[in-house]
Length: 392
Image 1: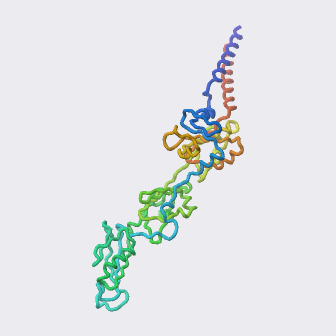
Image 2: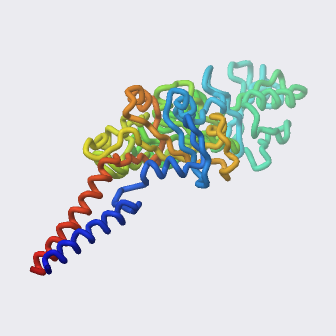
């Protein structure tokens, strides 16, 4: 009788636990269940669109969707000009040190005494002077001549015009001995941050980087930022190497900043390896990212539920004809779902470009959840069996 009672108790406990576990949604898992993701999406770009109250959009990866998620277009240096043609002319500037030579056609003029005779090279050289804070230089009998911000040739002509009524066919030559205004600052991840003086031949962005001793980091993940008169643009260092049109001439007072930006993505769920991974390559695709993490686990993964989490600009989501009134701000949380059971998706994931800080989550298959459940039931059953044996 006692054994029968214990056996009945064991069965009752197992049945009760089975009933509880069958209705429980908290079985062990490494992330959200795909059914929850599907149910709770505020917006779904699928064949059947439903709206519920969580602020993210669910988008199925397809041929049409790929066009909205092309590689982000970086800013360009082309808007600054100076990409083609010769080097730009560099004007004189505040703080520049210049020397001035004045030639006269013959002796007996304003600067050449009459006893100098007729000889080639009738000229005088004035002492070197610095363009002052008012932007001027001083020339005898010509007064204070504006120089800062003007081309050397323009200043020479101005001085000649001022001396024309007093000197004999004057000609003026201005030479820059020290250029303090025509410099470019380069800083950041270079071996020798400094100010680089621009020569009349002209220096391009890569020339300035080379003058600073080159990069101290991996060039694949290095960005170059150019600041000029309140305008800023950033391009990848590899773009400068591959696209000569981006390697423009620099201008006085430009600031070039070199920054290494480590790009990573997270892999979670039923992947071969979970964790944070570096891009390393310059244009990593979703397919390559999955392979980098060891692919999908055959014993756990649901190939139809490969989920990529990303903040997407609202204008991109709107271009897909999605209602974005539920979302505040300029970025929309989006989950992009790839069905790897579809053979064509393997082509799509090789075209879908990854972005920095993307998160990939691979959901467990339903069969894995069932095995988890049965393991728990078996564990409970074994525990009850042990209690029964102890009771005997």
